[in-house]
Length: 440
Image (tube, rainbow, N blue to C red):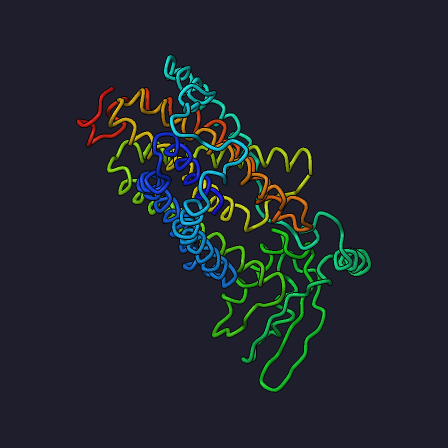
Protein backbone atom coordinates (compact mmCIF):
# COMPACT_ATOMS: atom_id res chain seq x y z
CA UNK A 1 0.00 0.00 0.00
CA UNK A 2 2.86 2.37 0.75
CA UNK A 3 4.40 1.57 -2.63
CA UNK A 4 1.21 2.58 -4.41
CA UNK A 5 0.99 5.80 -2.42
CA UNK A 6 4.61 6.69 -3.17
CA UNK A 7 4.14 6.14 -6.90
CA UNK A 8 1.07 8.37 -7.10
CA UNK A 9 2.48 11.07 -4.82
CA UNK A 10 5.75 11.20 -6.76
CA UNK A 11 3.97 11.63 -10.09
CA UNK A 12 1.60 14.23 -8.62
CA UNK A 13 4.57 16.21 -7.34
CA UNK A 14 6.08 16.19 -10.84
CA UNK A 15 2.87 17.44 -12.42
CA UNK A 16 2.54 20.28 -9.90
CA UNK A 17 5.68 21.77 -11.47
CA UNK A 18 3.88 22.23 -14.80
CA UNK A 19 0.22 22.69 -13.77
CA UNK A 20 -1.00 25.65 -11.76
CA UNK A 21 -4.28 23.99 -10.92
CA UNK A 22 -3.67 21.08 -8.59
CA UNK A 23 -6.74 19.27 -9.92
CA UNK A 24 -5.24 19.32 -13.41
CA UNK A 25 -1.97 18.05 -11.96
CA UNK A 26 -3.74 15.19 -10.18
CA UNK A 27 -5.76 14.40 -13.31
CA UNK A 28 -2.58 13.84 -15.32
CA UNK A 29 -0.79 12.03 -12.48
CA UNK A 30 -3.80 9.80 -11.96
CA UNK A 31 -4.09 8.95 -15.66
CA UNK A 32 -0.41 8.01 -15.92
CA UNK A 33 0.23 6.36 -12.55
CA UNK A 34 -2.95 4.48 -11.74
CA UNK A 35 -2.67 1.89 -14.57
CA UNK A 36 0.72 0.87 -13.16
CA UNK A 37 -0.76 0.75 -9.66
CA UNK A 38 -3.67 -1.41 -10.84
CA UNK A 39 -1.32 -3.75 -12.72
CA UNK A 40 0.96 -4.00 -9.71
CA UNK A 41 -1.92 -4.75 -7.37
CA UNK A 42 -3.32 -7.27 -9.84
CA UNK A 43 -0.07 -9.24 -9.89
CA UNK A 44 0.13 -9.31 -6.10
CA UNK A 45 -3.55 -10.18 -5.61
CA UNK A 46 -3.52 -12.91 -8.27
CA UNK A 47 -0.28 -14.35 -6.90
CA UNK A 48 -1.73 -14.43 -3.39
CA UNK A 49 -4.98 -15.98 -4.59
CA UNK A 50 -3.02 -18.92 -6.04
CA UNK A 51 -2.49 -19.92 -2.40
CA UNK A 52 -6.20 -20.75 -2.20
CA UNK A 53 -5.35 -23.80 -4.35
CA UNK A 54 -2.97 -25.12 -1.69
CA UNK A 55 -3.68 -28.32 0.20
CA UNK A 56 -3.07 -26.77 3.63
CA UNK A 57 -5.87 -24.69 5.14
CA UNK A 58 -3.44 -22.25 6.78
CA UNK A 59 -1.84 -21.48 3.42
CA UNK A 60 -5.24 -20.97 1.78
CA UNK A 61 -6.35 -18.64 4.58
CA UNK A 62 -3.12 -16.62 4.31
CA UNK A 63 -3.59 -16.14 0.59
CA UNK A 64 -7.19 -14.99 0.91
CA UNK A 65 -6.50 -12.65 3.84
CA UNK A 66 -3.48 -11.01 2.21
CA UNK A 67 -5.19 -10.65 -1.16
CA UNK A 68 -8.09 -8.92 0.57
CA UNK A 69 -5.68 -6.59 2.34
CA UNK A 70 -3.92 -5.63 -0.90
CA UNK A 71 -7.28 -5.00 -2.56
CA UNK A 72 -8.29 -2.66 0.27
CA UNK A 73 -4.92 -0.87 0.02
CA UNK A 74 -5.47 -0.45 -3.73
CA UNK A 75 -8.94 1.02 -3.26
CA UNK A 76 -7.69 3.56 -0.72
CA UNK A 77 -4.64 4.45 -2.85
CA UNK A 78 -6.79 5.33 -5.89
CA UNK A 79 -9.71 7.00 -4.07
CA UNK A 80 -9.03 8.47 -0.63
CA UNK A 81 -5.36 9.34 -1.21
CA UNK A 82 -5.74 11.45 -4.40
CA UNK A 83 -8.79 13.19 -2.95
CA UNK A 84 -6.87 14.08 0.21
CA UNK A 85 -3.84 15.32 -1.75
CA UNK A 86 -5.96 17.64 -3.89
CA UNK A 87 -8.04 18.81 -0.93
CA UNK A 88 -5.08 19.90 1.20
CA UNK A 89 -3.12 21.55 -1.60
CA UNK A 90 0.58 22.02 -2.17
CA UNK A 91 1.42 22.61 1.49
CA UNK A 92 1.23 18.89 2.20
CA UNK A 93 4.72 18.71 0.68
CA UNK A 94 6.10 21.17 3.25
CA UNK A 95 8.91 22.08 3.74
CA UNK A 96 9.78 21.61 0.04
CA UNK A 97 6.49 22.31 -1.71
CA UNK A 98 6.64 22.07 -5.54
CA UNK A 99 6.12 25.44 -7.25
CA UNK A 100 4.77 26.11 -10.71
CA UNK A 101 7.68 26.40 -13.14
CA UNK A 102 10.08 24.83 -10.66
CA UNK A 103 12.95 22.72 -11.94
CA UNK A 104 12.39 18.98 -12.18
CA UNK A 105 15.61 17.70 -10.68
CA UNK A 106 14.85 14.09 -11.57
CA UNK A 107 16.01 14.73 -15.14
CA UNK A 108 19.52 15.58 -13.94
CA UNK A 109 19.64 13.71 -10.65
CA UNK A 110 21.58 10.68 -9.49
CA UNK A 111 19.33 8.10 -11.12
CA UNK A 112 19.29 9.85 -14.48
CA UNK A 113 23.09 10.00 -14.36
CA UNK A 114 23.18 6.31 -13.53
CA UNK A 115 20.91 5.56 -16.48
CA UNK A 116 23.15 7.60 -18.78
CA UNK A 117 26.19 5.70 -17.54
CA UNK A 118 24.50 2.34 -18.07
CA UNK A 119 23.43 3.34 -21.58
CA UNK A 120 27.08 3.82 -22.62
CA UNK A 121 28.11 0.20 -21.91
CA UNK A 122 24.88 -1.77 -21.46
CA UNK A 123 26.33 -5.18 -22.41
CA UNK A 124 29.12 -4.93 -19.86
CA UNK A 125 26.73 -3.67 -17.18
CA UNK A 126 24.17 -6.39 -17.90
CA UNK A 127 26.90 -9.04 -17.93
CA UNK A 128 28.30 -7.93 -14.58
CA UNK A 129 24.81 -7.79 -13.10
CA UNK A 130 23.99 -11.31 -14.29
CA UNK A 131 27.31 -12.61 -12.94
CA UNK A 132 26.50 -11.10 -9.53
CA UNK A 133 23.08 -12.80 -9.50
CA UNK A 134 24.58 -16.13 -10.59
CA UNK A 135 27.32 -15.90 -7.97
CA UNK A 136 24.75 -15.31 -5.23
CA UNK A 137 22.46 -18.02 -6.61
CA UNK A 138 25.35 -20.52 -6.39
CA UNK A 139 24.92 -20.27 -2.63
CA UNK A 140 21.93 -22.60 -2.98
CA UNK A 141 24.34 -25.50 -3.49
CA UNK A 142 23.84 -27.84 -0.57
CA UNK A 143 20.52 -26.23 0.36
CA UNK A 144 18.55 -28.40 2.77
CA UNK A 145 14.83 -28.16 3.46
CA UNK A 146 13.28 -29.41 6.68
CA UNK A 147 13.68 -28.74 10.41
CA UNK A 148 13.10 -31.16 13.26
CA UNK A 149 10.78 -30.32 16.15
CA UNK A 150 13.65 -29.00 18.29
CA UNK A 151 15.09 -26.87 15.44
CA UNK A 152 12.06 -24.64 14.85
CA UNK A 153 13.04 -21.88 17.30
CA UNK A 154 15.85 -19.34 17.57
CA UNK A 155 16.10 -20.03 21.30
CA UNK A 156 15.00 -23.08 23.28
CA UNK A 157 11.47 -22.80 24.67
CA UNK A 158 10.28 -25.03 27.50
CA UNK A 159 8.76 -27.59 25.10
CA UNK A 160 12.12 -28.15 23.36
CA UNK A 161 13.90 -28.59 26.71
CA UNK A 162 11.33 -31.19 27.69
CA UNK A 163 11.74 -32.95 24.34
CA UNK A 164 15.52 -33.14 24.83
CA UNK A 165 15.13 -34.58 28.36
CA UNK A 166 12.79 -37.27 27.04
CA UNK A 167 15.21 -38.06 24.21
CA UNK A 168 18.13 -38.36 26.62
CA UNK A 169 16.32 -40.64 29.06
CA UNK A 170 14.07 -42.73 26.81
CA UNK A 171 15.14 -42.21 23.19
CA UNK A 172 14.50 -39.52 20.57
CA UNK A 173 11.14 -40.90 19.46
CA UNK A 174 9.47 -41.06 22.87
CA UNK A 175 8.50 -37.40 22.75
CA UNK A 176 6.24 -37.97 19.75
CA UNK A 177 5.20 -41.57 19.32
CA UNK A 178 3.85 -42.75 15.98
CA UNK A 179 0.38 -44.28 16.13
CA UNK A 180 -0.93 -47.07 13.95
CA UNK A 181 -4.68 -47.73 14.15
CA UNK A 182 -6.50 -50.67 12.55
CA UNK A 183 -9.61 -52.84 12.89
CA UNK A 184 -8.85 -56.02 10.96
CA UNK A 185 -6.99 -58.94 12.59
CA UNK A 186 -3.63 -60.13 11.19
CA UNK A 187 -1.99 -63.53 11.17
CA UNK A 188 1.02 -61.99 12.90
CA UNK A 189 0.28 -59.17 15.39
CA UNK A 190 0.94 -55.82 13.75
CA UNK A 191 3.06 -54.74 16.70
CA UNK A 192 5.46 -57.60 15.97
CA UNK A 193 5.54 -56.88 12.23
CA UNK A 194 6.25 -53.16 12.67
CA UNK A 195 8.96 -53.67 15.30
CA UNK A 196 11.26 -54.96 12.55
CA UNK A 197 10.86 -51.92 10.28
CA UNK A 198 14.20 -50.06 9.94
CA UNK A 199 14.11 -46.86 11.98
CA UNK A 200 11.63 -48.19 14.58
CA UNK A 201 13.14 -48.16 18.08
CA UNK A 202 10.52 -50.15 19.94
CA UNK A 203 6.80 -50.70 20.36
CA UNK A 204 5.61 -48.58 23.29
CA UNK A 205 2.13 -50.03 23.77
CA UNK A 206 -0.57 -52.07 22.11
CA UNK A 207 -4.12 -51.28 23.21
CA UNK A 208 -7.65 -52.09 22.08
CA UNK A 209 -10.77 -49.93 22.33
CA UNK A 210 -13.92 -51.42 20.85
CA UNK A 211 -13.24 -52.42 17.24
CA UNK A 212 -10.01 -50.37 17.06
CA UNK A 213 -6.52 -51.50 17.94
CA UNK A 214 -3.79 -48.89 18.40
CA UNK A 215 -0.07 -49.59 18.30
CA UNK A 216 2.19 -46.81 19.62
CA UNK A 217 5.71 -46.89 18.19
CA UNK A 218 8.81 -44.92 19.22
CA UNK A 219 11.13 -44.08 16.34
CA UNK A 220 14.90 -43.81 16.57
CA UNK A 221 15.03 -40.45 14.81
CA UNK A 222 14.31 -37.03 16.27
CA UNK A 223 10.67 -35.94 15.75
CA UNK A 224 9.94 -34.11 12.46
CA UNK A 225 13.39 -34.90 11.08
CA UNK A 226 13.87 -36.32 7.59
CA UNK A 227 14.95 -39.62 9.15
CA UNK A 228 11.63 -39.77 11.03
CA UNK A 229 9.73 -39.02 7.81
CA UNK A 230 11.62 -41.81 6.02
CA UNK A 231 10.69 -44.23 8.80
CA UNK A 232 7.01 -43.22 8.60
CA UNK A 233 7.08 -43.96 4.87
CA UNK A 234 8.71 -47.35 5.50
CA UNK A 235 5.98 -48.17 8.03
CA UNK A 236 3.31 -47.23 5.48
CA UNK A 237 5.06 -49.26 2.81
CA UNK A 238 5.19 -52.26 5.15
CA UNK A 239 1.50 -51.93 5.97
CA UNK A 240 0.75 -51.68 2.25
CA UNK A 241 2.22 -55.15 1.70
CA UNK A 242 -0.19 -56.76 4.16
CA UNK A 243 -3.26 -58.40 2.68
CA UNK A 244 -6.53 -56.43 3.10
CA UNK A 245 -4.84 -53.98 5.46
CA UNK A 246 -6.90 -51.06 6.76
CA UNK A 247 -4.21 -49.72 9.08
CA UNK A 248 -3.58 -45.96 9.17
CA UNK A 249 -0.39 -44.28 10.40
CA UNK A 250 -0.77 -41.10 12.45
CA UNK A 251 0.98 -39.11 15.14
CA UNK A 252 3.15 -36.00 15.04
CA UNK A 253 5.77 -37.31 12.63
CA UNK A 254 3.19 -38.70 10.22
CA UNK A 255 1.27 -35.42 10.34
CA UNK A 256 4.31 -33.25 9.59
CA UNK A 257 5.45 -35.69 6.93
CA UNK A 258 2.11 -35.20 5.19
CA UNK A 259 2.49 -31.42 5.64
CA UNK A 260 5.93 -31.58 4.01
CA UNK A 261 4.49 -33.52 1.07
CA UNK A 262 1.66 -30.99 0.79
CA UNK A 263 4.15 -28.10 0.66
CA UNK A 264 6.10 -29.90 -2.05
CA UNK A 265 2.95 -30.50 -4.09
CA UNK A 266 1.82 -26.89 -3.58
CA UNK A 267 5.17 -25.60 -4.82
CA UNK A 268 4.85 -27.69 -7.98
CA UNK A 269 1.41 -26.20 -8.66
CA UNK A 270 1.56 -22.65 -7.32
CA UNK A 271 5.00 -21.48 -8.45
CA UNK A 272 4.40 -22.09 -12.19
CA UNK A 273 0.92 -20.61 -11.82
CA UNK A 274 2.31 -17.43 -10.22
CA UNK A 275 4.81 -17.04 -13.06
CA UNK A 276 2.10 -17.56 -15.68
CA UNK A 277 -0.25 -15.01 -14.10
CA UNK A 278 2.48 -12.39 -13.71
CA UNK A 279 3.53 -12.95 -17.32
CA UNK A 280 -0.05 -12.47 -18.55
CA UNK A 281 -0.48 -9.26 -16.54
CA UNK A 282 2.78 -7.87 -17.94
CA UNK A 283 1.72 -8.70 -21.51
CA UNK A 284 -1.65 -7.00 -21.04
CA UNK A 285 -0.05 -3.95 -19.44
CA UNK A 286 2.90 -3.48 -21.81
CA UNK A 287 1.39 -5.01 -24.96
CA UNK A 288 4.76 -6.57 -25.63
CA UNK A 289 6.31 -10.02 -25.47
CA UNK A 290 10.02 -9.34 -25.21
CA UNK A 291 9.79 -6.95 -22.25
CA UNK A 292 7.66 -9.32 -20.09
CA UNK A 293 10.03 -12.24 -20.76
CA UNK A 294 13.08 -10.21 -19.77
CA UNK A 295 11.35 -8.76 -16.71
CA UNK A 296 10.20 -12.19 -15.53
CA UNK A 297 13.71 -13.61 -15.98
CA UNK A 298 15.18 -10.83 -13.85
CA UNK A 299 12.62 -11.47 -11.11
CA UNK A 300 13.34 -15.22 -11.04
CA UNK A 301 17.08 -14.52 -11.11
CA UNK A 302 16.69 -12.14 -8.19
CA UNK A 303 14.79 -14.80 -6.22
CA UNK A 304 17.46 -17.47 -6.62
CA UNK A 305 20.19 -14.93 -5.85
CA UNK A 306 18.45 -13.88 -2.63
CA UNK A 307 17.78 -17.53 -1.73
CA UNK A 308 21.46 -18.35 -2.24
CA UNK A 309 22.63 -15.32 -0.26
CA UNK A 310 20.14 -16.13 2.49
CA UNK A 311 21.27 -19.75 2.71
CA UNK A 312 24.92 -18.68 3.00
CA UNK A 313 23.94 -16.46 5.94
CA UNK A 314 21.77 -19.14 7.56
CA UNK A 315 24.44 -21.82 7.23
CA UNK A 316 27.56 -19.84 8.12
CA UNK A 317 26.31 -17.11 10.46
CA UNK A 318 23.18 -18.42 12.16
CA UNK A 319 24.09 -22.12 11.73
CA UNK A 320 20.56 -23.16 10.83
CA UNK A 321 20.41 -26.84 9.84
CA UNK A 322 17.98 -26.22 6.97
CA UNK A 323 15.11 -24.17 5.59
CA UNK A 324 11.67 -24.51 7.11
CA UNK A 325 9.11 -26.21 4.88
CA UNK A 326 7.19 -22.97 4.27
CA UNK A 327 10.22 -20.75 3.54
CA UNK A 328 10.73 -21.60 -0.13
CA UNK A 329 7.12 -21.15 -1.25
CA UNK A 330 6.39 -17.97 0.70
CA UNK A 331 9.72 -16.35 -0.17
CA UNK A 332 9.10 -17.03 -3.85
CA UNK A 333 5.57 -15.66 -3.63
CA UNK A 334 6.55 -12.42 -1.90
CA UNK A 335 9.66 -11.78 -3.96
CA UNK A 336 8.09 -12.43 -7.36
CA UNK A 337 4.80 -10.67 -6.64
CA UNK A 338 6.38 -7.67 -4.91
CA UNK A 339 9.50 -7.58 -7.10
CA UNK A 340 7.37 -7.27 -10.21
CA UNK A 341 5.92 -4.10 -8.65
CA UNK A 342 9.17 -2.29 -9.24
CA UNK A 343 9.45 -3.66 -12.76
CA UNK A 344 6.00 -2.30 -13.46
CA UNK A 345 6.72 1.09 -11.91
CA UNK A 346 9.85 1.52 -14.01
CA UNK A 347 8.78 0.01 -17.32
CA UNK A 348 5.35 1.61 -17.56
CA UNK A 349 7.03 4.99 -17.15
CA UNK A 350 9.67 3.95 -19.69
CA UNK A 351 6.91 2.96 -22.11
CA UNK A 352 5.28 6.37 -21.73
CA UNK A 353 8.54 8.29 -22.16
CA UNK A 354 9.87 6.07 -24.96
CA UNK A 355 6.90 6.94 -27.13
CA UNK A 356 7.97 10.59 -26.92
CA UNK A 357 11.76 10.46 -26.57
CA UNK A 358 12.84 7.08 -27.93
CA UNK A 359 13.83 3.92 -26.05
CA UNK A 360 17.21 5.11 -24.80
CA UNK A 361 16.21 8.59 -23.69
CA UNK A 362 12.86 7.30 -22.46
CA UNK A 363 14.44 4.69 -20.19
CA UNK A 364 16.88 7.26 -18.80
CA UNK A 365 14.00 9.64 -18.13
CA UNK A 366 11.96 6.84 -16.51
CA UNK A 367 14.88 5.80 -14.32
CA UNK A 368 15.47 9.38 -13.27
CA UNK A 369 11.79 9.87 -12.40
CA UNK A 370 11.16 6.56 -10.62
CA UNK A 371 14.59 5.72 -9.19
CA UNK A 372 14.01 7.63 -5.98
CA UNK A 373 10.50 6.24 -5.56
CA UNK A 374 11.57 2.65 -6.19
CA UNK A 375 14.54 2.99 -3.84
CA UNK A 376 12.39 4.50 -1.07
CA UNK A 377 9.71 1.85 -1.49
CA UNK A 378 12.26 -0.95 -1.67
CA UNK A 379 14.22 0.09 1.39
CA UNK A 380 10.98 0.48 3.35
CA UNK A 381 9.68 -2.91 2.26
CA UNK A 382 13.03 -4.57 3.01
CA UNK A 383 13.00 -3.04 6.49
CA UNK A 384 9.47 -4.31 7.11
CA UNK A 385 10.43 -7.88 6.22
CA UNK A 386 13.71 -7.61 8.15
CA UNK A 387 11.62 -7.12 11.30
CA UNK A 388 10.54 -10.76 10.95
CA UNK A 389 14.14 -11.66 11.79
CA UNK A 390 13.63 -10.77 15.46
CA UNK A 391 10.72 -13.19 15.92
CA UNK A 392 11.37 -16.51 17.69
CA UNK A 393 10.36 -18.84 14.83
CA UNK A 394 13.14 -19.76 12.40
CA UNK A 395 10.67 -19.98 9.49
CA UNK A 396 9.69 -16.32 9.90
CA UNK A 397 13.33 -15.29 10.31
CA UNK A 398 14.25 -17.07 7.09
CA UNK A 399 11.37 -15.56 5.11
CA UNK A 400 12.20 -12.11 6.46
CA UNK A 401 15.91 -12.32 5.62
CA UNK A 402 15.44 -13.81 2.13
CA UNK A 403 12.74 -11.31 1.14
CA UNK A 404 14.74 -8.43 2.61
CA UNK A 405 17.80 -9.41 0.54
CA UNK A 406 15.66 -9.97 -2.56
CA UNK A 407 13.90 -6.61 -2.32
CA UNK A 408 17.22 -4.82 -1.92
CA UNK A 409 18.61 -6.68 -4.94
CA UNK A 410 15.49 -5.74 -6.92
CA UNK A 411 15.76 -2.13 -5.84
CA UNK A 412 19.48 -1.45 -6.11
CA UNK A 413 20.63 -3.83 -8.85
CA UNK A 414 17.92 -5.41 -10.97
CA UNK A 415 15.50 -2.52 -11.46
CA UNK A 416 18.05 0.29 -11.57
CA UNK A 417 20.87 -1.39 -13.51
CA UNK A 418 20.07 -4.74 -15.16
CA UNK A 419 16.61 -3.94 -16.56
CA UNK A 420 17.71 -0.59 -18.09
CA UNK A 421 20.80 -2.30 -19.54
CA UNK A 422 18.62 -5.00 -21.14
CA UNK A 423 16.32 -2.32 -22.56
CA UNK A 424 19.29 -0.44 -24.04
CA UNK A 425 20.61 -3.66 -25.60
CA UNK A 426 17.22 -4.64 -27.06
CA UNK A 427 16.40 -1.14 -28.29
CA UNK A 428 13.08 -0.98 -30.11
CA UNK A 429 12.81 -4.79 -29.93
CA UNK A 430 12.20 -4.38 -26.19
CA UNK A 431 8.62 -3.44 -27.14
CA UNK A 432 8.17 -6.13 -29.82
CA UNK A 433 5.76 -6.74 -31.53
CA UNK A 434 4.70 -3.07 -31.18
CA UNK A 435 8.18 -1.62 -31.65
CA UNK A 436 7.23 0.39 -34.76
CA UNK A 437 5.92 3.24 -32.65
CA UNK A 438 9.26 3.75 -30.92
CA UNK A 439 12.62 5.20 -31.82
CA UNK A 440 15.90 3.65 -30.69
